[in-house]
Length: 304
Length: 103
Image 1 (cartoon, one colour):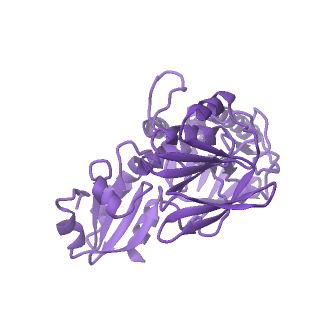
Image 2: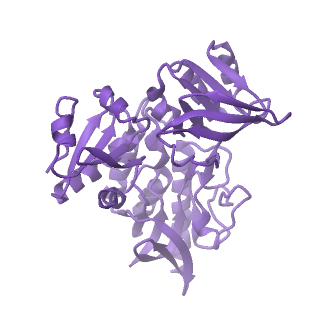
Image 3: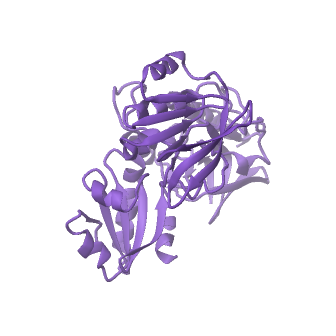
């Protein structure tokens, strides 16, 4: 099956790319591993996207999906596992099929970075969480810890401090990368304890998580904290590994590309959170989608 | 069959004493990934007669959520003969949901 443009990933960036490509009258296939929406599904209330003062991530995603479908974009729910080039065409291989295209747009987004500790995967939903706004309500009046030093960690700790009895904020450095105002607000909370220059080194569980072991980076001392929940906010990892053979990635795994969304490989473009950029927001993701599609259309018109 | 709404009043009869295996979807109205997964569950419920799919709203049925130690949603729990035999957390594609019933 041949399409002018294949978009990999049905988050806001990928679906916006599909809208722009369809409006340029190109045939479009969107491949998605799970379901449309991507990371924005986890946001209960979007307040910073122009036009609507409040909209849930789910409603936003559903609207963009309907818009792309109505314009004629095709959606197939299969995970793309690789890309190669054959006779000037791009071939995208999924877990079930192979599809050919004139151009490909990588809009795969990112996933939560894990701590990499033993039993971490097994304890997800049993005390380990990567989303405070999703799971915080399960920890009312309980003891929790947040690991991380960026804005997500600070915002998670603030959110949880209103629900939980006590919040430990564990950070491997002694100052935060996140906003100063958030740090100050946390310091005013009576139930937040800061634990600096420490790493979580062990998860202690029976059926569910009941304590963590933390190791001080300066003197190597070990401390056990009993708790009910651990919220991991140590950043995100771009999902580009399957395409590294064709496009250049930076040291953190992001596809190297400027505002024009061109990758190191002709005919492959990148849009959204998996691109090297300074601001990863809904509005910059959709902007990337528009740009990548426009450049992909130009590329196809030139080779065709 | 359609997805059935479950409360603590009919949980025992419809889930624990069910003659066929049950896929229980613990969810909430504010949970985007839960809403995203629901149409897939509706489809599976229509396509399959060998098992039953039920929905449990964790805000309305907080006792059930606590009894089954649900601490992250969406949470799918498979019951066979009144016992939990499988569990999956987070949004997963339709074929992965179906596979939970085959394990």
